[in-house]
Length: 369
Image (cartoon, rainbow, N blue to C red; front, side, top):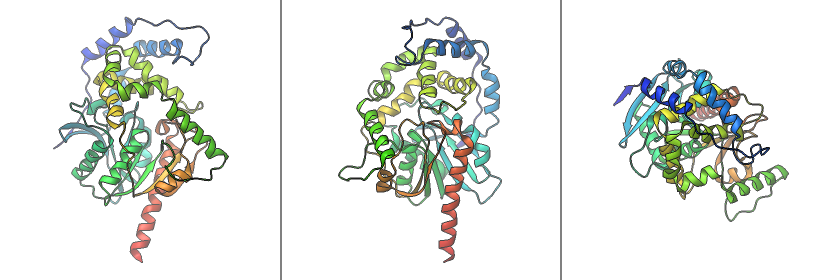
């Protein structure tokens, strides 16, 4: 059963948030260390002050409720999703999957341009936002992909595309593996990982730099990833009890992983942070990292497109990717980072549209022959 869903946060929850923010017990900070020890105190205080005195959740709640949202249950888990049908009856369905610390909110700015050519399905990953929390073990990338396949089938879509970044990249590739006859192509913005084993590649200077960056990332696992992959329950107590703790945990990434020229507003950051806080899903969202740790990267026989944004966490290496996947489109952008749908929505939407237009044109030509 699929039912319409409306966001309606109890006023008591908003009052509790405001009370907690006014009673924040602030950490000290070493002088002149900048970002070397983590997100600076001044930045967190700035965002917290705005969260307390200027940010209006009800305004954003009303705006989000203009989107057609739904709720269903798959594999015993509540699944929240946005479903926007294109004015074109023959539009290709496209499922968009977010990552951490994102949410369905990050795709808001690409809905209008993409819905010109696609029927859009934008779910919240189990454990995230209104799809959370999860209530049992096993909700890693493969199981989420199985849920997405069921969701698309339930919506009546038997041929569709997929897009994702961060965890959404792995889920989109896994979806192509579990629904090979249905996923016509996969568009990705993030392809982390070591080089394919047992193969030697002749890399140019830029790819050599990218490889060094990937190896450094693997050798020095970031603190957030280590904690969420090993002790998500432990970190969940702090994030679930302290709104400023949740704020700092997420807001840090909106600086570290983005293009310095990008303009992600305080309202955009705080709407996403508020979603995590008001749904109490810091811990269940973190569990996805542990549930997926150690699982082999998903295979994907479907044609793929890779969009590389220069300020992403790591940058994909084309020879490595082409060894593993059927790469039909590769785009190197001059601007943008990990949150491309927020940072450069027009570039991302155009790249997605162009890729699937090519696939459909080739399919039409092949059918005519």
